[in-house]
Length: 282
Image (cartoon, rainbow, N blue to C red):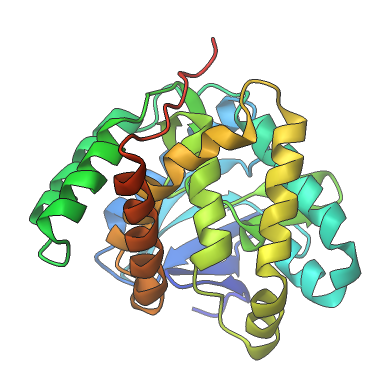
């Protein structure tokens, strides 16, 4: 295939694919279901009014599955941050406002959060890495979460936000679900604080220095941008969402996540109760 590569990630490559179109092609031939799920999730997010690319079709090219999307022109927010770190507050505000905008959209038709919680509970039960007391705390934390009906991205971070001439656009909807906004915010918070940086020395060095600052600014601006929830309510979601991230099996993050999970679970056990998050507002 002689199409020009215009982007790449852990799971897929992005190619120019005709006028105004881009092909997101998975690296693994067996990822056909992933390509279909991501395309369908993106379609639903687009139909709900979220700032995402349009979707044309799913395809197989040289044995690799993929989907054809509207081509978006613009750098990622992460690449802008690396070049202009003095603008960290403005970029954190922009991502927070986009996230709040997404959470005003319906998540109808996407996988339900309740199904994901059940799957997470089954994963916790099956793990031998957790002592019985810790396992009980983690199950209690997962099962305490209220459901919701909002559009949740599931993997929002600066490398998944493209800064186009028409404003920010969010990509990579493989992990989207219909659920509670704070579950999605907690997922982003865990990724920002504990996630493994993308390849490249400059990006990794930048994230090592700025990750805590960006996370703090993003959370402050998110709770400024919406009025349904308070910052203190997020704490109830951080432990189970860290466990969900651990279940993703990213080897480079395992040690950091296990330390966070153990420390946060110890706090919960000491307090004797979990924080009580509220239901989403209609």
